[in-house]
Amino acid sequence: MKTSRMQLFALPGMPMVQPGDDLVEMISQGLVRADETLKAGDILVLAQKIVSKANGRIFDLRDITPSAEAEALAVEVDKDPRQVQLVLDESVDIVGKRPGVLVVAHRLGIVMANAGIDASNVEQADGSEHVLLLPVDPDDDCRKLRHALGERYGVDVAVVINDSVGRAWRQGTTGLAIGSAGLPALWDLRGEPDLYGRELMVSEVGLADELSSAASILQGQGNEGQPVVVIRGVSFPDSDMGADALPRPAEQDMFR
Image 1: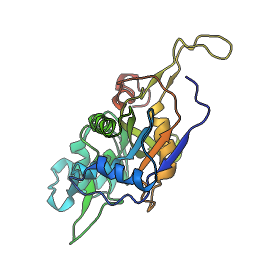
Image 2: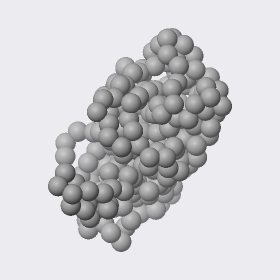
Image 3: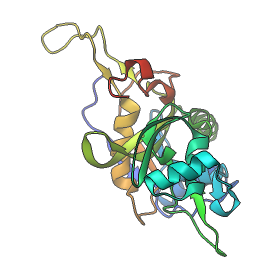
Image 4: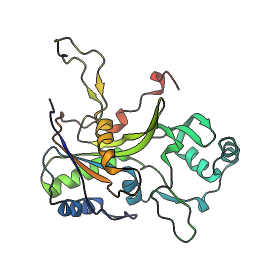
């Protein structure tokens, strides 16, 4: 299923998302502003922050009481013990630590810094110390959004939720899929032929991650205000696989 050209565009004028907001309605209004509609095979990539905000995953550090474990670990890594407590609550294992960062295995299976918790682009008011956590079940969020958008527009689309993460051997952040629906997040090409007819033996493509990185260029990291990107023209097989297929199992991780 060869793709030779694809198009990406960000929905303009997206408002700041508040807990309980209807993301489908906000996306629909963004499509109107862009003078666009959804077409069959379109992929919508949503920044994690707007999904977490809509789901009410905002916590005020003033309400967090750190445990003795969090207090001791906070001294080691020079971080706020209340935020360390949230990191521990969201994680199943501490993979690495150094001053300023905790690398953990998130309960979603993703190995990432500080369990994906941060305060960037999170509104603060009246002395609040709000931080944002990842969605509880981003694959399910994608499935629900895909179903609702499909019903509204009468076409089959795919949905990806992405986040910005660092990489172990590379400088800089890149987009990474934490949720997906409607496409093979991990596209298995084993058994397919290469250019010379040889059978591919190990090739698996992190399709949802590649789409996440592409969309991240338009979404930006600062004040761009473009959290929803539509990708059009990508060919892929039908699949119910979610992004939970992407994290490498711990027993296969050579470096954990």
